[in-house]
Length: 338
Ligand code: NAD
Ligand code: UD1
Image (cartoon, rainbow, N blue to C red; front, side, top):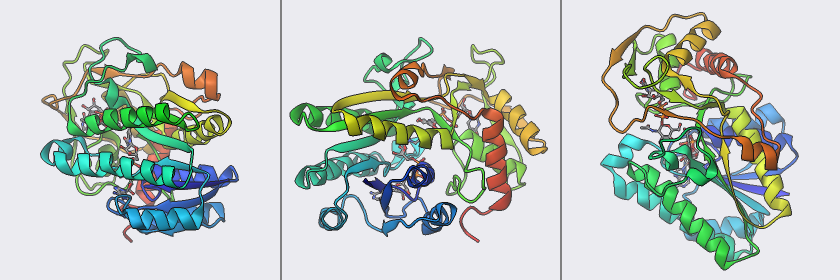
């Protein structure tokens, strides 16, 4: 079975390509390398000993997409390609709606033209931004978010659901990821953020390697056990395995399946810092700073539906996430740039 992976050179995409190849799928990747490097694809091939057909193309380039679908004849698509920085989406909303929403529509149109009926879509826990009751389950979805990036995820989910209603042969898994962290245990692939990292753990890793002086902890006055924000961190390799399970599910069925992919555990910022210090043997200096606008106190998953229907259960804990993140960071202090 051949899977076309959009955004397969990126952080989650590259780890998922490893999991797919190891599970015996053939893989081709479309990525415009806007936020990634071809080096990641080469390293996936090196790790698995298998080939990936790679196209450096934009998913908005319909003629190119049609040529690729005609040549590859994929059985299924996993759609990662998107812009994902929340702050940037506030400054550049049109770029985000253009890439994420038009990109998804272009992909769905191409799938329709070539009769491809299976899709796994990268959604996000950002769709739960307004939910107060924890843990959040798939029904907690409230059609409200705080930023253009979040809206693109809500809109794409809705566009995909409507497309499925119109074509009962389509089978789609909408996967709502919580906070992906870590790297492949080999240290060969990992997250390679451009510029100053926005997210907690890539920033912590750069403090450990001496690239940044100290971490700013955004607020210690939240109503949580130590006052810092609580999130549901999931090892990127567990997340990648979740895609293989979701693909198996939609191969046998049709309709829309929506799953949280998280660990079901909440961990605070200070707990993550401590876990990273233990795993790396490095001290992480930090200061308490004001809250980051738009942040919420806590969000963690009710992960029971994915366990029940997919047999999905995380195997790696926060210590593993930190150990593998540090291994990647220490081996690749400048990411994929030599
Ligand atoms: P990433 O930026 O590492 O990967 C996205 C990839 O898509 C990149 O390689 C980029 O070059 C490519 N891309 C972007 N626009 C493209 C276009 N128009 N045409 C072709 N390729 C394009 O991000 P990631 O963390 O791997 O995220 C993958 C998906 O998961 C995204 O849809 C993101 O919104 C979603 N997601 C990520 C997180 C997270 O914390 N990392 C959480 C929830 C959801
Ligand atoms: C971010 C995105 C969210 C996305 C999620 C998935 C923002 C505002 N939101 O959320 O849309 O779905 O990633 O991974 O970017 N923190 C610090 N110091 C830092 C960075 C973060 O204290 O330098 C804290 C935050 O306040 C938060 C926690 O660490 O409590 C996690 O932050 P982050 O990694 O940015 O993830 P989210 O805020 O959950």
